[in-house]
Image (cartoon, rainbow, N blue to C red; front, side, top):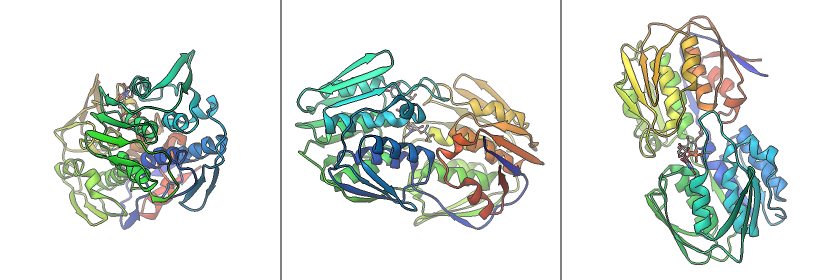
Amino acid sequence: MSKLIIEGKHKLSGAMNIHGAKNSALPVLAATILANGISEIHNCPQLSDVAASVRILRHLGCNVSRSENCVTVDSLGLCRSDIPDTLMREMRSSIVFLGAIAARTGEAHLTFPGGCELGTRPIDLHLSALRQLGMEILEDGGRLECSVKARMKGATIALAFPSVGATENIILASVTAEGTTSILNAAREPEIVDLCNYLNKCGARITGAGESAITIEGVDSLYGCAHSVIPDRIETVTYMAAAAITGSTLTLKSVNPQHVATVLPVFREAGCAVFPSKGEIKISAPGRLNRVHSVRTMPYPGFPTDAQAPVMAMITVADGTSVFIENIFESRYKHAGELMRLGAKIKIEGRVAVVEGVKRLSGTQVECTDLRGGAALVIAGLAADGVTEVTHIHHIDRGYEKLKENLCGIGAVVKRV
Ligand code: EPZ
């Protein structure tokens, strides 16, 4: 079991390149199943979740090779339609393979992805939407046995909640369906737009990506293409929070400032100077941050739920009291308990977290509870007195490529043992 040993109170400086977005690479890799041929996915981050997706593609019979940050998938040889439970359990977002496998083979056999640290992670919106497209889904003791009689048929689907995963599954199931599909109340995340850009390059006919209404005109078949994944907006916010809590000036490159437009005001309210420019964001933090009045997580383009933990970490040492309202996941404050072990003062009331700023944090051993919660502990450790040991960092490896190397490259003192 690896852990990070962080020596706090070192200023950061210089510049670093942000990697490709995990939450775009995963659905795009699932989508390669539909492209009858070779796709090259560039700017693909080296993460354990990406490795898990590659294992699923290989299990299905695809030929997958990986260079530095390009994954090449030849899905011509796809010959299975099942995902073994072990692979499903490795990564709950494997559910996004369901629509693609069923659309390609006419059937899909997988298990319920299971909950995770953020709550039960239901998939009711996925299943009801796929049934509207003509998929027969038998839920039998945690197993999902799916079959499509002839070919999926386009439908108008209104989502009760703009679920990212459900929107992706509907798109993947309907690009080669018969007729047209409309998604109302669709998720508007940049990762949805990226997925649709890849699919349209493969010959799909999708309009409205990024809006609440997406229209997919079914086509008979798709072909492979080359695609470069968008920058990771949550990794961007994570490194901004690291600069903010250490009173540093940092330049982040290969970013898309537009994708974090509703997060930048929070950093400015906290007293940071933030300069977005083409492909770059420069942040310069004060000696001590101001509190932020209130941060509400919302579907895109609102403040992203994935940014809540990293921003909460940085605000634990601000001057004053800040309030967070987590509107997306039912329990996404598990990191608060670990932050309190470092000396943070946080009070949780349901979806509301009240963070009373403290002057200093003191290093100790803390345990990652989930991916973004783990990033929060690293951010806090960068500012804590003494040494902070962060354990269970396999959570972090799911979504942050070369975190230790990147932090050391900008002045932090971090060891991985
Ligand atoms: C995606 O998860 C991301 N994961 C999450 O990032 C992100 O936090 C989330 O979107 C919200 O932006 C990937 O893209 C791989 P949702 P997803 O469906 O698709 C409820 C990270 O840290 N819901 O938009 O699972 C659900 O319980 C991860 O990178 C249903 O009730 O998110 C949640 O409360 C964590 N029924 C809310 O909707 C459903 O059928 C948002 O979920 C589906 C979802």
